[in-house]
Image (tube, rainbow, N blue to C red; front, side, top):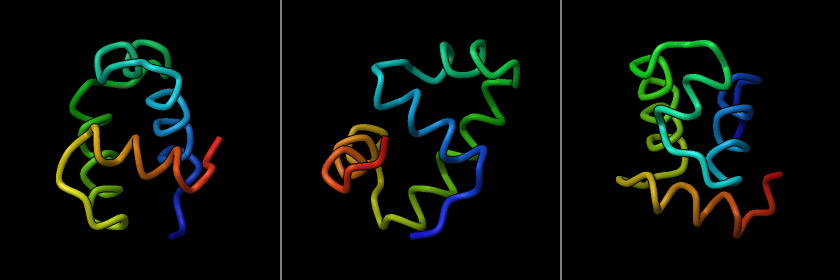
Length: 63
């Protein structure tokens, strides 16, 4: 799976335990932009939930 640089930033912060709101604050982007990045990754990874995405990213060793 190929991720954009911003998607990679978002997933790394998610892996560190941040929620959507915290990620948006950390990256100085809107929460809806975070949701958009997450939805793109849901499709790329074939998952439906935030928790599934984070678990799969951890399993794949994304860091």
